[in-house]
Image (cartoon, rainbow, N blue to C red; front, top):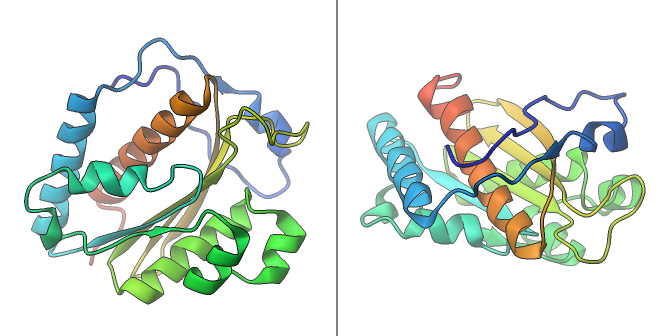
Length: 199
């Protein structure tokens, strides 16, 4: 794929987010639109074979994941709708993210993306959900969560949930594009290609 040297280590409780996010992605070559369409088409084929469906809950990517997926003709067979929950209030109102979770951990956190993914599954009745919340920049970063920090959540109807943190290098557009590509690639590899979960 076009994303080079992605930090693919899973985040485990107790590990410093700052330390994890120092494993920065090196931008040698971004995934092209053609590569994204090919990946999205393959995801659609896998979902169709499983008679499964997908939903998205996006914050920093602003609907970019849903856009790439719905670029594929016939995607309505496996993608009905997604959520763009840019504010904390939207995360709570549309996805059921608990205000206490947002207060305790912040919007860019493992706990929040897991609640986002689980809420999206519940509301949409899809088979799989992707959630994403991050700091695309140029402002908003802190020492603990620098610009480029993105949390991803994945959940399935059978109860499998995973959360991953990546820190991407680049400007706002690059971070958003890399986050979109990373989310789709991880869904494909972790849930669909290797069939870690079945519907």
